[in-house]
Image (cartoon, rainbow, N blue to C red):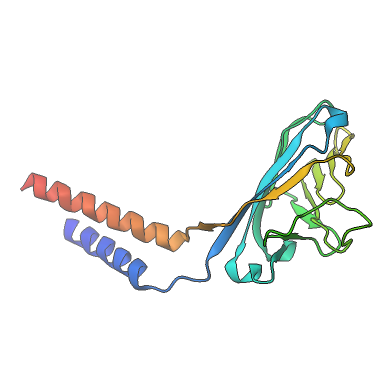
Length: 189
């Protein structure tokens, strides 16, 4: 049985090293701070994942997002919560929502700025975040914290980081398992 396990691990590991990867998936971290001072503070942090080629135009639209996650820290009005694209009933909304990912500042809605760049609204369960209008809601409790776009808040978008592919991780685990098995066999001998 051990020779079969070693052969399978070696094959998986070798395939990982020689199989061309699909397009790289990238993760961007986002943070909204300083907009909810009137309600006792609060901030939104999160991330989304998209394919590298989708960022070539400098923007990632909600349709290009493979997944998303948002965390609201809570304030005096709306308690803390987290929502993600894998939650039951998760959905997105907005007027062609997208984020700049090329260093161009993302801003809340302002008639003096490009009104077509809407960062969108995200809903899951009883929670709703409208990032364009800085609105945070607990729908079931009927609580709303409305950010003030006139405050000097910030919206930061990190540089992207590469998200490892599951097949790559599986192959690397197979190689690690193979190395451990071979080390144990050598110790047993």
